[in-house]
Image (cartoon, rainbow, N blue to C red; front, side):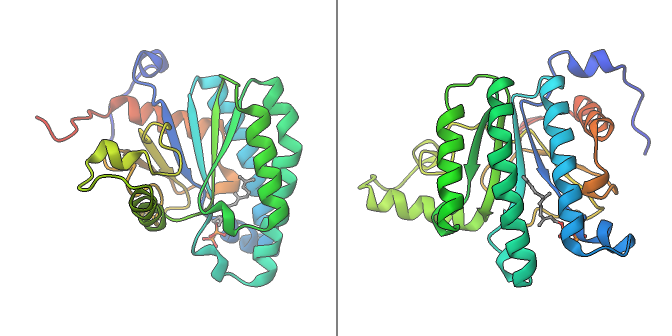
Length: 240
Ligand code: FPP
């Protein structure tokens, strides 16, 4: 069914999602269609990240989270994993100055302790340097798995002497980034329609937007289309 026409001003008037989360899918297919190695798709994916972060900031999004590497992605060929790690190092290192200039804050979610030691150090430094910035909050999910996050939270609660049974509020404190609001809108590119272990706890009431576009082809117009669709959704949180 075709959704009714909406003017851009209607979307930005109060119904802008505060937290937009993106499952960036399709880098491999993008490269394959061009006869390139998969890693070239990830390189093009970084350029799409740069465009999208800029657009999100310009559109007034408060939090943008990106699913960059899942806890299952270690199963990929060693060369692809190490290529991705190289890209993360390069991206984080080269972005910090720009993020500072743009008043943006960068944070990371996932089992960060299992990442290579130098990446942990780069992450720590980037988080620390941008900690007090109040513009766009960029969350990079690295070695992230939703089930693991829930298990990690339960284990942390238990070893912190938390009183059981927990309720939703006492549980939330143990998530990776408890102060980050739940995603209002989750976008997935490349035509796949699944959550793939992303923000499992946090997505309870998220709206979804799926696009056929492969991640390296994603840009400001696609983000705008997702925001317009979101602007037309009626969120009920279980009520009528
Ligand atoms: C999924 O596409 C993409 C990934 C597993 C990696 C995402 C990484 C980037 C976009 C690059 C760097 C990110 C940051 C934040 C600097 P796929 O490889 O599974 O694509 P396919 O399904 O077409 O094979």
